[in-house]
Image 1: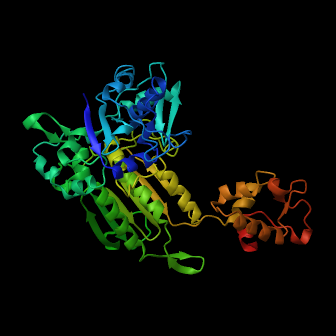
Image 2 (image 1 turned 45 degrees about the vertical axis):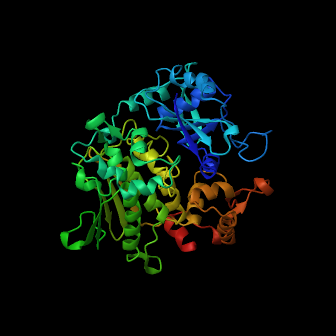
Image 3 (image 1 turned 135 degrees about the vertical axis):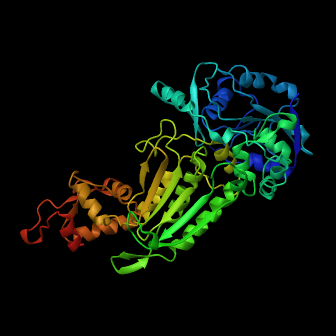
Length: 488
């Protein structure tokens, strides 16, 4: 018999209303075979996750109505045996130690017991009984074929230092941590530190030989840098220069941030924002305050801290200059990730850290896999050049340059150098301006200067713009960037 946990109405509602995500999914109790296996396989092949069996998803119709109508569990634990067999025996190869737990609502036992399945990221590539391979991305289970499976197999060969045991560590330091206790005040279902650490496989060894692993200490020890044998903190330095190789006298200050990973992220973001609030940069109207988008800073810092190689003895380093911010993350890019595919492919070097950080109420890695993409988008929205990513053998460096993009009008004209026409939608994607009306005003300004015109045969939703076909000699502009800038 598996463990039965009785939970409150409040906690049951939180389970029911939890959004399906990269780490969480629900399914009906009468679904078996490929349907359930697909979800479990996709978690094991990605970063791990939780599946609740016995909750209707939000797309279901014809529900019975009443309180907890989406909670439709098993009357007896034995009724789930076939589902458990589908997960524990019929997936190839078998998933290593899936954790099964039944949940029952106090006072609403007639709604049955749902089955909670917790799955860790696996070093193997798993297939359903039908031979299909899936991987979790966001709230989807995506099928893989051919070279995609080969790439997954290659990436699975990477071992994470987060799973290494920390020797000579007093476990009570972790079980009594205020960070862990604060986290468990929010965590579902309610539990105590020792049980949580064991269920989440954050403890290695048996009996008196038990030791926490790196992931547990990094997440919940009140100061991991004091007890871990390798550097694992965050260091921020700022310089009064824009030189690529600053002199010592340009250094204005340094700050080291130590503590549990979640708090380090919060403190690091606040400190970076404090520093850049006092930096002025030269703009078209003279000196003005630096306008780095906070979302871009957050995403790049979070990415550096949670995906770094903890086997490398070095802190995450942030260097703030007058014209840029550099974030240095220890370790090379993992597995098959390259500078060219880093925005489209994903690989978590530290899946436990990624998954458990995602369980904080203010989860810093809310949109899994979208961090760097968000940084690129936010830089574009404030009219700054995109982040620059450089990968070396011992570190990955992401730079946020404080350099303005070409004006929206310049970008439109550059596009029309190679294309016959452009729509408002295309221009919004090109410039990063989300407002249809703002882009229309760009076109209106270009039309007022007799540079572009509407394509005559296209109207309404199909409207498009093109270069003026027959401009007068006096009004014909040259197309060089400098002369366009003078016009605009």
